[in-house]
Image 1 (tube, rainbow, N blue to C red):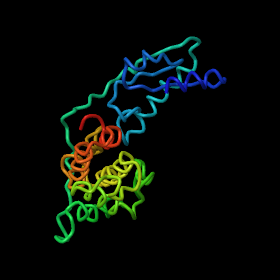
Image 2 (cartoon, helix red, strand yellow):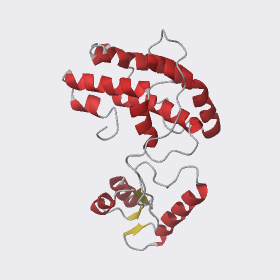
Image 3 (cartoon, rainbow, N blue to C red):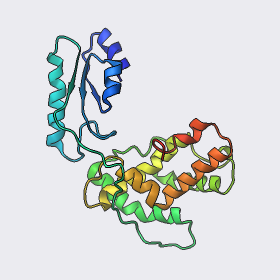
Length: 226
């Protein structure tokens, strides 16, 4: 982002960078930056809190008045509890003849649709996997866990992006099922550790790694080192 900021500034466009990693912001030296000590993925702070988000934006826009390069620190931090996992109930098994992950996906469909109607599809599903193709995408990962080479399993695109869409479906549904707005990454931790589809994804990722697939192909199927 800082590199793009310099390019846009050279073309005469004023820019502001919002950053959550102080060392990175300082090292890349953007023309104007607001460092916010917030969890990664939450550049404006708490979700569903427009008043707080507007205050962050107001602080950022004030930097346009600066005559020299400036990095300012927002005066409030938000801790991220790395051990926190979302408390989110999953639907009971409905069809014992289905793979548990596919049964789970179907059970979550009403919650997903309610969340989309309420909040919009903001988490990112649909870039690669459309809703009607979700079960087949998960089935492709199941085939990988059963020993089918990933290139032959029918994964409908780059594995990392497919996994993001599957995770997006679950995290969208979790907005409707959880009592409170999930903190940063808690939805992801819940998906990977508590859901059948998350278990399939992790097992497929490991199978791809064990088969000797190039690291970027499988590593980025989950964020960080999960």
